[in-house]
Length: 546
Image 1: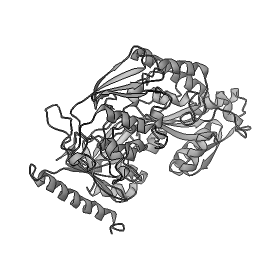
Image 2 (image 1 turned 30 degrees about the horizontal axis):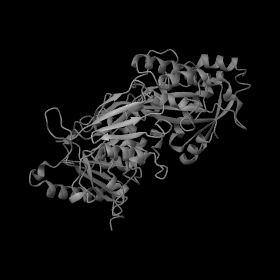
Image 3 (image 1 turned 90 degrees about the vertical axis):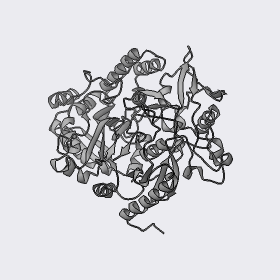
Image 4 (image 1 turned 45 degrees about the vertical axis):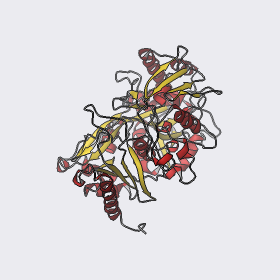
């Protein structure tokens, strides 16, 4: 009935539904004019609300509202308790005992007795984790425990409030890994209830609960009045009465809707409008000051160029020469790149692969590649190339959205004597080609799955498949240090290991960091308590609207 309604009308229509519903539900204790609905738009397709399939930002954002994990990441990138109050690790680092809260209840659902949400217990954690690794489910999050947990008895509910995780080998980073939204805790009886399609009718313990989903148009969540968390003053969270997610329009349409004050924030903006909003220094232009809020912060994402290190048939031999790879690294002015192509959003990738803001990043390191075109040309000469008469020729594969970046890099490398041919291919095809080692030189990005540098360094561990080791990098010294860091409990020593591994990668140059990313939110002035998260999570528990 509503599939052909214009985007603006959809926003108004669902605003009416949400306000009417929340008013009816809340009229006993809250006045209508106190209702507070947070609205945003999602341009990426959402096919499931199951945390086991929260594989992209769109899925992560919405499952973060609906489900809790044992532990979570705060805005300072620290791992803190959530469903688990605390945990204890055995001396051999292979057994972790989690002590659960006893005041957490699942959302109300018809699958429960009398339709009332029951208490969450350790059995629910066992079920959720067993389900995650079940081959029949085929969850993209199965890697969380793959080759890491005990093959015989990985998960155990000692009683209602104690859950035990057993590892195959020590892996001190596992606590951080468990913050991933794939590890959201779900109730067996609701998942297995045949009367409801679980992926479209989820039930968790989160601050908001599912209300309505009109396919292709909107998803509406309402406040979980039985949520277990409180703020420092003792007030129950969340503050908002509901969340309304429109599922229509392009990024360009989204920005126009934001300008009309019909949605409360946007994550990044369509490139068409970036020069209208930002100056080259990344600040709001004068015309926008006071009308919108620019909300920025470090984002654990490194944008880079990757080079296939493993010899393949018909591979371009030019890139197998380390001197050429290093010359490319020195030959790109990354500061100019982010100023002119990104309006200074991010930091130049002049250090290692570990991004700015993540523990393990070293802003004082001397193993990165600042812009040094003269040194780049000397390296090419040492590699045997006579610039001007015998320029090396290489291909760079990228997707249409990054064609301007590829063009910039081509011009930069031309200055030092490298001829770059740009191959623009569809995103799905390029991802497949990279995974199969069918391209020599490609643009990529790596976003942290959890707040630990190991998430980035795993990209270069030779025993890892592709993904994540897209470049097929192999360095036995790196592998030895990587395996050592899995058992190192001393944070200072582990950080030193991370930086040493980072320096080894940069010396071998299988990748060229371009920039360390930045969260960019445009927020309406009446939205309060909204701040960026280093993993770009959409954190709404403590948000309210004036």
